[in-house]
Each structure stands twice: as structure tokens, then as C-alpha cells.
Length: 342
Image (cartoon, rainbow, N blue to C red; front, side, top):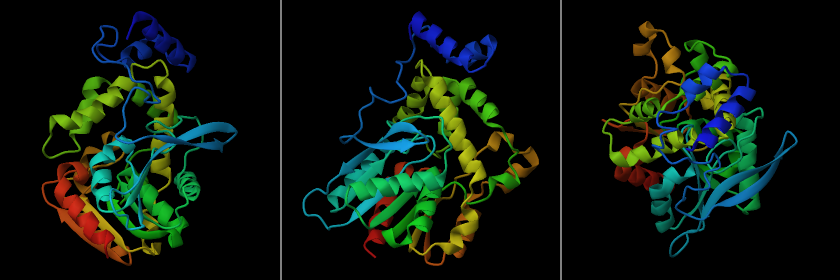
């Protein structure tokens, strides 16, 4: 980042009501020295594995764009479609290997970036899983897809659950890959205001982002660093405060809009894939130390959730963390394809 870019960041953040000291602390290490290459919050410089299209949406009087990949099958099509829903700290491109596996198996694969994420618009609006599900249904309608198998990872698992509850006739299969929200975070994570969440986003550093991402895995590999560094590079953008606000608002959405109380209402046959080393808790840093050993226990949560969902099958992956489609790629894809053929 050059000096003028740094000044623009400071001006934008000061306009949001932050002190100069806080703004300077929020700038990433190396921002002025030129360590990382800036990445716009629309990810214009970031190449996705397949062509990206835009669906225009109007939400709360704002004209927005929802980015998505629509990947046709390779070779003979089986006439079926799969929808892949990304997690909170990711975007559609991280499904690239899963897209390839599905497309080569005859599936059409649709991969949206939800509003507020990836190459989609980053507005200051009321975020809700209901709205995200409705946006996703509109995308499928635009593409002429009536029925779809829905795969959701992490936050995408919460969205997939909401989508399946809102549009049960549309969902042929439901796959929840280490979804967050298997427990109600309101019961043990202290409340934080949007302003507090926003400041937390601004205060993140390259080191803290990388450390957070490494917590997803049992066995870290350098290739995973791409996604942590995308987040660090965003912080070098003059528009980063806008992304930080949309991120804070989606954290609020996760906290205030649990789906775990409605698992019993799911009609779709469901595959629940759980990495047994996953201990993800949204807002974990705010949880009292004496509670940490009792929350985010995915082995227990997975078994409990599988019993709540009427037609569910549980796959437990030993020594795997929060992202099985990275860390146990072959097993995850094998289980996914087998389930979709049922």
C-alpha cells in the first residue's frame, strides 16, 4: 500500500467515528512498508476457478450484485444440480476441488457468494439467513433450477438449513459439513454490539488472521494460507471499513438467528459430516474460560444433531478439523457422491 492509500484508509475509518490511535493500530503490519499486495473488497484481482456471473438484486433500496459460478457438468450430464454454500470466513472459490469432482460426476454446480462475501456487494443492510435463502432461491429460479442438492459448510450449513426449511420441496439432499450453529451461542457467548464487532474486525492483523485460520485444521498445509492472506490483503484496501461492517453484521446474524432449535423440522434426507477435532465456537474469545471445555464439542454436537434430524446419516472423520473438504478431501468427496446417489 502507498502512503496515499494509507491516508484514504485513515480518512474512511475516522469518518466511521474511530479514534486516530485505533485506526493506526488497526492497519496491518507492513501496510505502509509494502508487505502484502492489496486486494479490493470486491476481489477484482482474485481469479476464481470458473467464470463469475452477477445477479442484480435490490435490497433495502440498494442496487446490489450477487456473484456466482454456474459450472456445467463435464461429459454426460445426469440432469441434476448441486448448490454449494460457503462459510463465514471464505468465499465460493474455496469449493474449487469439490466443484471439479461434482462436475466430472455429471452434476451442474452452482456456487454463489452471498451478499456481503467474496465478489458480491458489501452493503450495510439487515443481514438474515431468511434473506440469504430468498436470494439464493431467486438465483436458482433465474438459472431455471427447480430442485437441487444443497451442501453447506460452516455458516453455509446454517444457511443450508434455513434454505431447506423455507423451500423443502426444492431440496433433494441436504449436506451439512461441520456447520456452525449446532448449539445456541446466545446461551454462553456474551453479547457484543455491532460497534464492538466492527472494531474487532478493524483491529485484526495479518498475524491474528493467520492464527485464526490455522485453528481450523489439525494438519496445517501452506496451500491453506491463500484464504487467510486474502483476508489480510483486504485490510490494505481503502474500502476495508465497509467490508468490516458487513462482516460485523453477519456475525450478529449468526448470533441472533440460531437454527439448532428447528433441526427436527427438516424434511430432506441429510448427510452430516463432522470433523472430530473441530472445536469451533463463534465468539469463542468472549466465552468464560471455565466453559470452554463444554462448548464447541463437535463429536458430541454431531451425534446430538443427527438424532434431531428425522432422516439423517452421520459421518465422523477422526483427526479432521473444521474443513473436511480440504483436510479429508478424498473421503469427503467419496461420502458426498455416495450420498447424492441415494
